[in-house]
Image (tube, rainbow, N blue to C red):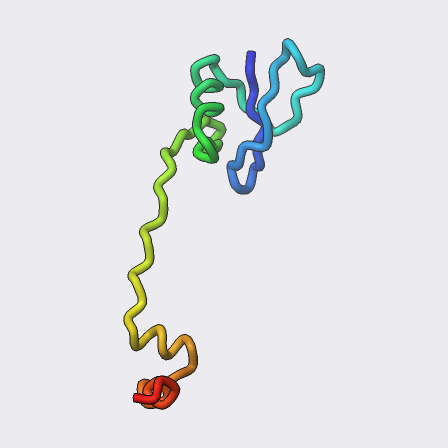
Length: 90
């Protein structure tokens, strides 16, 4: 039988254990079926424990930020349009 040791506050899985290999299973832990264990191993940072049950959540990448406008780039550089024109000799 397989087990998932997890953080009680966050649900983050801290490690996987098997009675066949490990003498001590740290607490808290939940028992996993072979299928649950494989699913948790096959996903990257998408498995967690909620209400003492394994939850697999597909990873969704955050949206790309909107590109900066020319004005925003100038402001980030601490320049005004007039200062930029002076620097460029325009």
